[in-house]
Image (cartoon, rainbow, N blue to C red; front, side):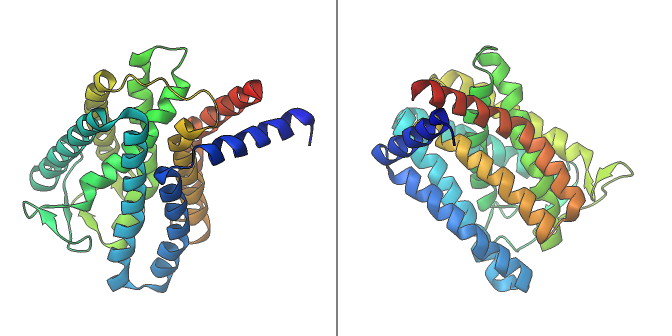
Length: 276
């Protein structure tokens, strides 16, 4: 290990230690919950799988919410949260009742309580839990492109996550597609991914006015959402390869999410090296 690498690693360790906040512990708790979810899914424990899904998603949601409050304050976070929950729920309600935006699908009872009897309460929360890491990750990538370039980058970054989420949740029985069509991705209609991009973009159109916090420049507390995005990237890729989904889904997720995660991590590493 050369001196610059050692100095960078030391700088990262000191930065994270001196900025140890609730969001840091919540991200660690999320990482620790991932193996439990995987084991329950492999064991076919249907009754516990819903609870495990809530716990894992809930931890990532609370991490995103906590980090946003810590770095953006209560009022900006409230605006970002309410806009995300409101628009995500509206899109999901129209999708599950009218077949609009995403295509024709319906939620089962696996994920528990449904808002207005249609959309599981966990779904809007799951939108926010990845909208936020994708937003910060895109901010790192768009620093030299301008704030408006951040919108399509962020929308694409969260859409790539669904390359893993949708096949897994359909296999679990969380929701059912009526007609995937001839052109589909492992049984998921391509209209679904267009819907994801459009829904995320509509939310980010609000966020770009609400969130004026500069993108992180190096590995410190501000960069934790990028780390979270990268953890999901590696976790989803490995889980699909080893446990479910298969090599095809794993390769798609690894490449697609990696387009955003890898360059963002590299930029943060370079910034850290310069600071060290």
